[in-house]
Length: 172
Image (tube, rainbow, N blue to C red; front, top):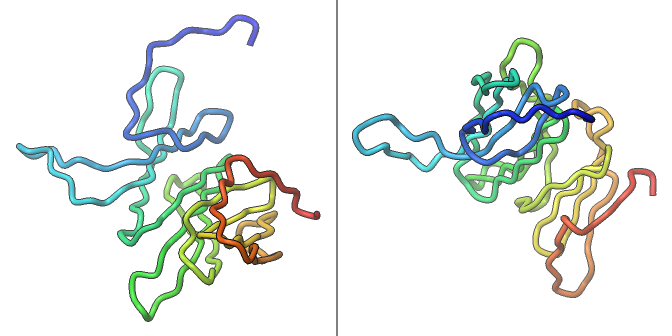
């Protein structure tokens, strides 16, 4: 930190969503363009993990995001949470927890049912908060493989939460 090394910028496949492993893994979010004559795009968005070696970023794995909106993604130091809206009447709205083990392939570790399609996900330590319209759902994700719902609800008034300006603590 006292004598930083200035390096050339690195091209990333999409916008940065987070880092883990002390900056050695970089997570980005965006489309995968096909290298055909038109650089076509099928509408799928991807969460990509890349290894950063101090000089360049090298692809590790990619996770296609669901087509139905919304599908918010939260990356928190190696924990990845993904909101998945029900695509049909026979499926449920869920929040999934993923991680990237040493084998280098995204692995789903849990699924949490939610009563509505989550539009935003934020974490406050081990407290995961999902919001939709004027409702919140709270989860204890101390162990992402075994999340526990700790509360749900919202005010009777029509409000739109901005979780970027919120704060919370798991045991309060």
